[in-house]
Length: 407
Image (cartoon, rainbow, N blue to C red; front, side, top):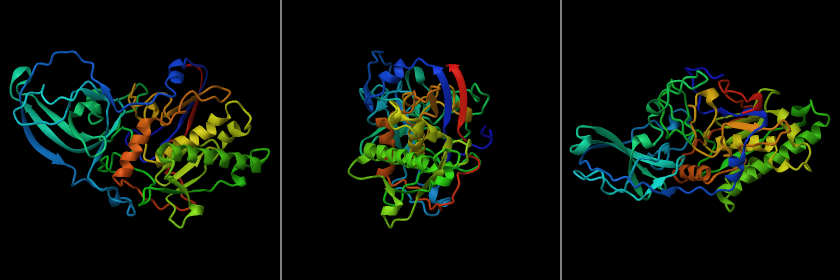
């Protein structure tokens, strides 16, 4: 279990729950839903206006860049932080002007919960009339594309978890202090000064991940046929790579095999020690070799979504800069913290039957892809330089398997 004082969010692992009886009708129904960024605001509540006075705008031009800790990292084009929508009950303003009423300039839509946004500045607002007289609020300047910008109360975003969740979750694990839980993964731990511009990922300076798979027959000695086990590992690894490339941009692959280019390698994917789980840290992914047993029969009805494939694809999501979207209370997420559907590929928990059918993590959502494209568009590139022998950071929590008859 993760140390309460150390929250190494550059490195995330997968939690597997084994179960036989699960009600997953809602998961299956949501499998193919396309998620919109905006939804229509159906609130019919009559707003009572309060006038506002605008304070000073503060930007992030003085933020520490990832390059301070990772010398090869590429500084982003714009000093944008990244935030996720936690609560869409707050109005979105197209603009804020001195003296306006807080019922003016409201956009007739809301952000979907889980949407990732650029955040380029904050501004404190003071209410000078009406029921809110004397109150202050912090507004954040956000955008979905860096072109059209809006103002929204900070409490709509993942900026103030302490006022939204208890200090500990139901497992007794303290929530991260000063860290950011969201759809992008912040480099560092609570002993470091961090900000969400410091995204842990394996993109090179061109926005591509140059990878090398180091799996060999020696990694599968426990199998009756190590050569066949290696073959199936590589087949599912290749499918996971293609799945992400197709989802992001079919015409411009994001993952590039190091054997096909002269570009420097930025991510190494190999096999970890048996029973130590699967995990990813900056520039490196290690996969549990025991998962290969779920991929040995290509004629199985569930082969296309076998647990080896699902796990590799999830871990590659971390290399792309994505954090867990829900679940995972065991390492410091709040109870009911949820930024995506249960079937989201970046759900922290892989729930499966005793026969290996995965109920979760089968879907790359539009919101996953949107978050990736925000990073790519702003050149937030970690650009690490791992070696073939680079190992996952020792602070990385390993995959956990919990057997349950029902949940």
